[in-house]
Image: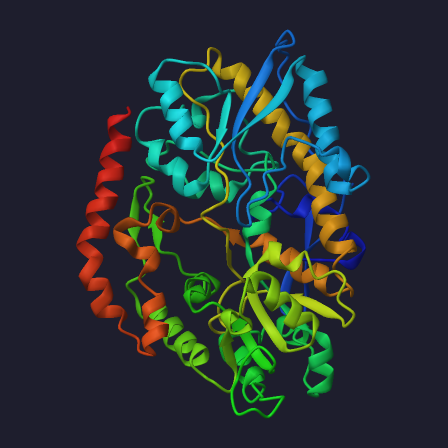
Length: 485
């Protein structure tokens, strides 16, 4: 992880859409306030030259089956909307599509579906060729990864996963036995909206006479204990009605089920892989127990914490309204919830999720399992040609679309100080994917929330009750991938 110098904050080359930094620059290590960083020694705007093969699709439609917009998923990766002309991300999407269409003499055509996996499966089983790419949510594409319906992306020569427009983290973490049937990179923006991060209210910091949280990050003291200590005593009955509700003040809000993001923030994962690229469960250890203990204590401290639902209604909106009304100090949520508070009068800042302890190496953030995975059906007539267009979409996504999203939409329109962009760098640069979160082996994804609700760390018994199912589900996936040759 790295802290970028302020003069480089507008450069997106350090940020991968899936959490890995660019490796294609000569760096000189620096350190500021306990955060290691890098200083450019060559042109920081220079992307590596893409190896885009020479194909001519003769004007045909290049069809991409994508998830219809729902919830926080805004499917806008391949279609610019005329009514949004002049909006930077929208215009960049249009430029990306035009560039790829001109390069390969094709027409990029998004096809929206509420059931991408179902539609893709039907088409492949019927030996159709309706789609060049499919982009279901990670949890959905994982369902067909072992059905023999998708190509192994690792063997397509026109895809170059070492390039910075692909997520190294996704490519490494989403494979099983070195087979990669879906991945993610700068083809899509949606994963950026889904990464977990934190915001804080600077007006409340000043009013309460507290230190700016940036100080703790720079001094390597931003931990679960620090967050809890800051928030203690901030829950207050402002209107004096004897109850804590949507009209009152709070220290820290999130959903209690987000305990899982604290586990990731502590550098732990539900599943890791061995040297043969075979997954195994990795949460049964004392460190995870410690993270759970501290999170339970914080989430059940009624002087410091409240669930987002305290604000009622559609709390994605009501919680943002309360934040803009200076009613709570910290919020943990998906990044998309933070992009709609730009009209807030009071100042606010971004902050990474806290470490478990100061000795922890680096910060860690999880991408949502609802992020779209890119996959290629086995029925495409020319895998190399399909891969070439996909490579171009990822490259131009990095060159055109990601800078508009990150530099203009986040860093310019939303951030209000010189520290928040540094914090955003930390958040995006430390994102990770986890097969356990995506496949939900044995129900492991839902195992942690009950601990918080019960205010008791019952992890050992809970894990023991599902460990056999975890291993059985994992063995099934391993056997399936092995059978695919």
